[in-house]
Image (cartoon, rainbow, N blue to C red; front, side, top):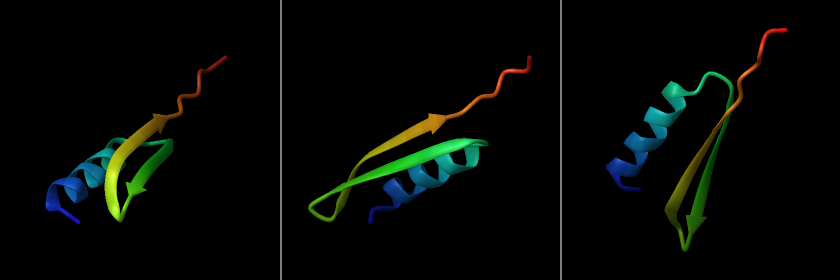
Length: 43
């Protein structure tokens, strides 16, 4: 895995407080990283 890909994944994980990180792999290589952040609104 390329260091640039690892760095991007780590950066996204560090920014994420609540949510998910989806890593898409095609033919053994990471092709996409999707970050979904969850936010709770106070009533």
